[in-house]
Image (cartoon, rainbow, N blue to C red; front, side, top):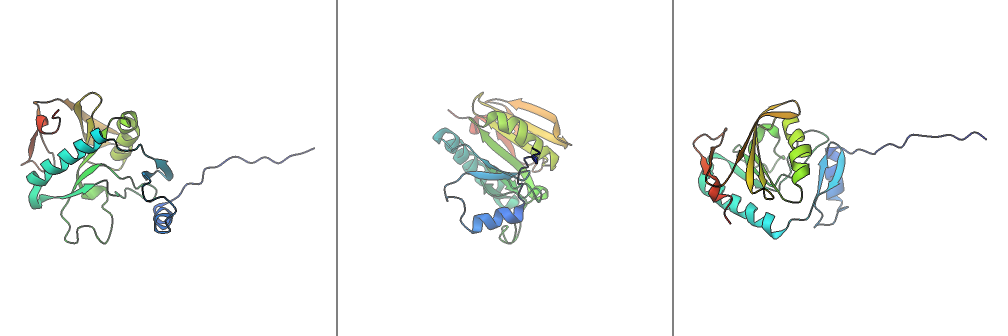
Length: 190
């Protein structure tokens, strides 16, 4: 007896199909999902510790950036036709319509921050490579497990050429908004 075999293939989706699925309410309103390289991925639920640090970032940067940037919190970022992650926090170039006619892309990002506790390994590896690949100039990983800030700059292919690890009391100046310096104690408060 002869049997036919076929290889198992993934069904990858693109941004247009992804957006149509969202408009059709295929996903629950509370679903935490992202499109990464054509795959729909479930994201970890946000705990109070993560949420509190995100609120702290929002309050701090709202005060510091004024009209120099638009703040995006867990908003879509269209990196390609196959990737539309929702980073925890972004500073975006000012846009007169506040991105009501399109999602921001990599060229719009002045600073991207992921807050990580349960997602630390994923954010240090998969997300880091994704953001470097699409040339996000400055990626901060607020590492709540080790209570530090990992700063990645100078993307090259799938990696960043520069990495700094900062702790409470250290200062950092943004690479795209050089008039803004942050004391890590303002982010990593107890």
